[in-house]
Each structure stands twice: as C-alpha cells, then as structure tokens.
Amino acid sequence: MELFSKFIGYTGFVQPDVWKNLVMIAVGLFFLYLAIKKDYEPLLLVPIGFGILIGNIPFALDANLEIGIYEQGSVLNYLYFGVTQGIYPPLIFLGIGALTDFSALLSNPKLMLLGAAAQMGIFLTLVGALAIGFLPEEAAAIGIIGGADGPTAIFIASKLAPQFMGAIAIAAYSYMALIPVIQPPIMKLLTSDKERRIRMKPSRSVPKSEKILFPVLGFLGTCFIAPAALPLLGMLFFGNLLKESGVTDRLAKTAGSSLIDIVTILLGLTVGASTQAQYFLTSQSIFIFILGALSFCIATACGLLFAKFMNLFLKPGNKINPLIGAAGVSAVPNSARVVQQFGRKYDPDNYLLMHAMGPNVAGVIGSATAAGVLLSYFLGK
Image 1 (cartoon, rainbow, N blue to C red):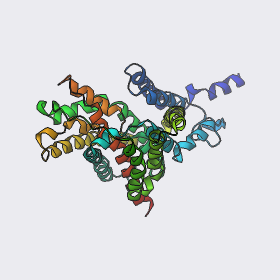
Image 2 (image 1 turned 45 degrees about the vertical axis):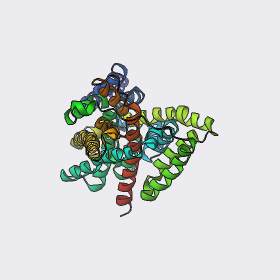
Image 3 (image 1 turned 120 degrees about the horizontal axis):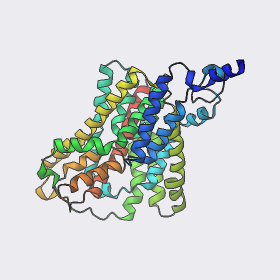
Image 4 (image 1 turned 90 degrees about the vertical axis):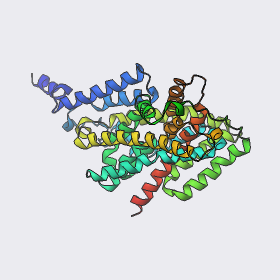
C-alpha cells in the first residue's frame, strides 16, 4: 500500500492546480482542431497544439524527473535552447528566403510602402502596452506581434522579454493562423464596393539580373539601417540569393524544404511545450493576447488605409486595389491568399494574388527591420 500510495502521488491526477493544466490542454486540442478540421496553418498549429499537450502533463516537481521544458538537463530544455537563444528564427528566415519570389515587389516597388505602413501596428501597440504598465522592453516585444511574423516575434522576445516568450509566440502564431477570420471584416469595413473591384495593371517581367542584385542590395540597405536585424535579414536575403543565383539549386532546395521543415517542427513543439500552465496562465498573458489582437487589427487597417491614401495621388489607370494593403502584414503567403479570395467575391476575374505578394514580402522585410530598430534602441542603452 505504501508503494501504491507513492505511485499515486507521482501521477498527474493528484498534482496541485491540475485544473490549470486541463485548461491549457483544452487550448492545445482547440489548436489541433483549427489545424486539422479548419486547415488553418496546419504546419504551425499541429506542432504547437501537440506541444501544448506535452507541456501540460502534470508531474511532481520535486521528483527530479528532468522532463519539464524549464528543468535544466531535460531533453525538452535542450531543444528549447534554440528558442531562448534565438537560433531557430534565423533558420526559418533562411528557408523563407529560399521559397520567396520578390518579383511582385520588384515589378512595382511602390508596394513596399504598404508593407512599411502595416508596421504601424507594432509601434502603436508598443504605446498601448506602455500605457497599461508593461516595461518598455516588454512592450516592444509585445508590439511586434502586429507584424504577424512568428519567427521575428520569438527572436525579439528572446532578447527583450524571455519571461513572456510563450505568450508572445502563441499569440503571434494564433493570429497568423486566424488571418482568414480576422482580416476579411476589416477589409470589408474600410473599403467600398468600387474599391474592391479595382483592377491593377499586370506586373512587368523582372529580369534575372534584378532578382540576383536585390538580395545583395536589399541586405546591405536594410542592415545598415537596422544592424540588430542582421541575423534575420541576413538569412532571409541569403536564402533568396541561393534561389535566384541559379548555381546553388541544391542548397536552395534544402533550405526551403528539409531544413525549414525540421526547424518548424522543433520550434512549434517547444514553443507549445513552453506554455506550462504554472507559468503561462497569468493576467499578463491575457493582456498580451488582447494587445496582440489589437496590434494585428491595427496593422491590417494601416495597410488598407495607406493604399487608399496612395490612390489620391495616382492616375486612374495606375490605381491600387486597397485590399492588397491588408497583405502588408508579413504572414507569407497566407494574407496574400486571403486578399485574393476576398477580392474574387466581388469580381471573380480579378486576380490580386501576385499584386498582394508585393506588400506581403515587403511586410516580412519591414517587420524584421522594425524588430532590429527596437533591439538597437533597447539593447543599446
């Protein structure tokens, strides 16, 4: 009976505050439902959702089992090292660069302004986080959620607010997955029926030389502005150069397939596991989710409104469909697809996908640059 009693004491059923773990397990199951049933970013939400289940199995903390993600020496803790030290996000950016075609942006460079406008959500949310009592470094890490860029959010959180890593990462990836739910109402609210039907001029053909020069010149330009973004932007443009150079196809294929898949699995699983209820279920986490939602909505609205503002100065034949401004957030290519689907509801023959990819990839560069600016300011004090 003594042995049986000891065994029962080590099971998850009798651990203190087990209800908190059950709440988080329900959240993990909801993520799996969204990924599998609704097909919302399954490559992200399946690892994160199952990671939440792994991280919220209750166990006796005094048993020295070395299984928890926050226990030194555990396997999960070693894997989580790549998150806390900002190793995984640059590798993700390497894969993104190898998969990204910047032709849409190069063919119409003014679309870069839409990607820049969408980053206003980051800075406005930073102000809001300061107003409710977060420290400046924490507010900067929370604000970056508005860029809809999970790897960038994790990277900046690892440097400025590691204590909120789980909440910031989960919020960023949650809103990325919910783009098809969040963005359409904002697009409908801020645009007229006539604006949604605007047809843009076909993109010009971009020569190979421009595609090769862009990652080199883009890297030099952005990193001179924001040197702290070097790990992210360096890997992004390097991956794109592997793709466009035409002489490193094997490396580009590896970066854009095997490597990014492996890192995505490790990143998603460990970020999910980091939501251990004892550390995650706090009032501050709730505020982070609320601020993250506001940040994402503001970023979408700023992109749309700036596109309308640009149209005031463009000739009738060169007007921009304001819907593509919503793609200024950097969730590539999900937000561009949402723009395409929403636009075709009003004009089935209006194909906005390639046009939306311009501000979409500009948003990736913009959010990473914004993160670099914030890191330079707060880490350089």
